[in-house]
Image 1 (cartoon, rainbow, N blue to C red):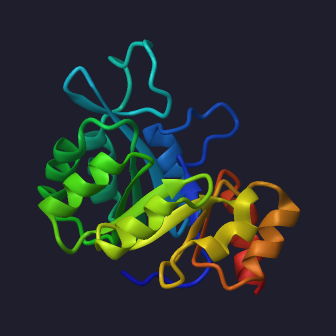
Image 2: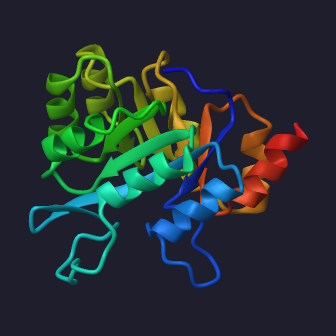
Length: 209
């Protein structure tokens, strides 16, 4: 999968001014301001795929589901990039099945901090793009890349100098870019993509290049 350079990805949608993160409204707002991509957190809770970042004991009954998100993508005819993160080690197969049954035309990447979902997805699909989510690189990046499990390593921007430790042929998406100076600098470098809470700011610098 090859996206345009400096792709702007809305981190959990646009969730300022009281709009909850990972809500359908947050993703609708990101679509409305023409974000290049949407980053979404999904976790398996009580046999439901819900949109939620933290794994804790809070009730998930009232939360939107992954199916709700996919319905929004279909109804709005949004054509942008979908960066789908699975929180925790459970639910990889359920997430994949829910996704492919929709037959979306969007470019998609599945990502996780956990190795197990990455390997499960690769067994299920030899072609789908998979990213290893890390704060900073480790040896596992090289192992998963050499085994063709992942096509990408997505890193915390604070560890930008450690990019040299990532397999050189793998693209990197940087998270979570919010400070104006950091956004400006990265948008003037040949980065693949930035994941940000401040989509308007990133799009402004993107269009200014």
